[in-house]
Image 1 (cartoon, rainbow, N blue to C red):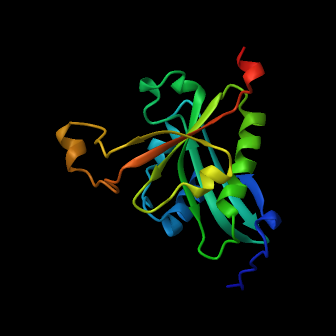
Image 2 (cartoon, rainbow, N blue to C red):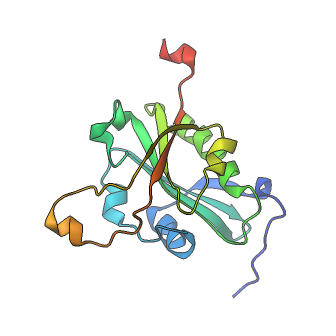
Length: 179
């Protein structure tokens, strides 16, 4: 085992694409509310991309993006990506989540030009939305908990959070590009 080298600032980190397995592993270790993920749910989407923030040999944050869970209910939902998880190590430098959001947005714009909007849901019981505000996302809506399915099988499954959610969006197209 080696001693973990911790950067002084998030700007020393590198934000790179990683495998779904890497993202799921670190999400399980660090996510405050939704540590459990399903590989099939992450991969069976029109779009998916996974990121890690690394320094030296250490991981300090991971993120999982996929086609939105409710893409069929959203205008242009299949041209969007949803931030399904963002998990940050407890010893990560201050501002790592906001820094990482900025890096991921730039990378997604570059490698996935078909994506026009990003969406993320914030659990209001444990988070305040500071990272989204700092990264210039827009609070689009707030909603109470609602189960995804009325099917018996789904109702009996483990529900990880019944908190109200805030929906944040980030438009990847400028006003000029939308005209």
